Image 1: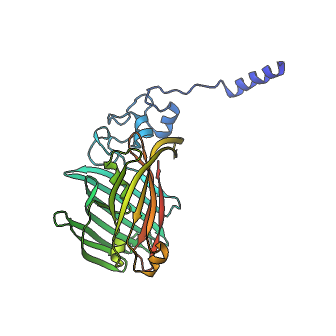
Image 2: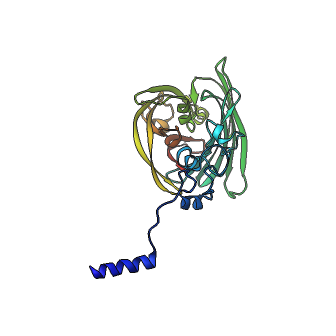
Image 3: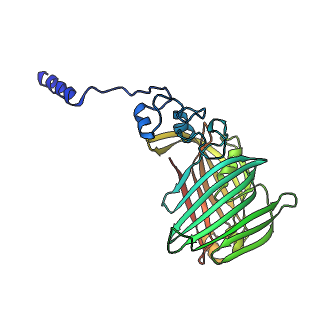
Length: 318
């Protein structure tokens, strides 16, 4: 017993007494965490946007050092969608950087998609939404075959949707040239990369279902029906672990499962991949408290000289 006390005293002298975690400004971030994040441990709202540093970092996924995290001119405390998030797929092939802005008559989803498969494909994408339904889009696509610092090929495109006549003019840049077409438009519709955002307009509750369409311009360029019919259902509330700069944290999330159905494809490649009754199931995970999209899965159809189809699983990088 005497020897144990001596060793304990030596340990205290060498290592020091353990200290309790301190949160000097009461913002939900420990002082040691604020050193890591470069926030002010004596100011609960380092950027003066009306939101506490801890709420921004742990709950809203906004930047506690920027009063306007998504750069839309609205302070985070007044912005219904203040996040500017980065998503990375599990294989580190594709990254997506979206932010959602309020504009007159709806929302504007601004994002850049970068795909690295041998070369680098970059898509600058602005989707104009009305009640989170696609109402038009602007696209600029580029490909870098040799030097990632410069574009070897680039071209603009757009979706011009006439909501009254339900007709859409599509101009789609591809490495094989520019595809132009005019098609009947189904509504409500969203694109494969944006589909979870349709659900942001909904009050998510377990057991509730939602129906909409997915429009894939790649399928249109290949002469296939570009629309999927989608049914989404909120399955459950689960715990989802997320790796943050300050360590792993678990979040209560709504699990939303979406079933995508399509008419039979005419192309033999697609028929081999999907079968005679094409049907895909994907999921998205939204935080229960603030409906922040933390993780989602989506199919991809790439416009390349060789057809490419698969799934990307994206998680938020924070």
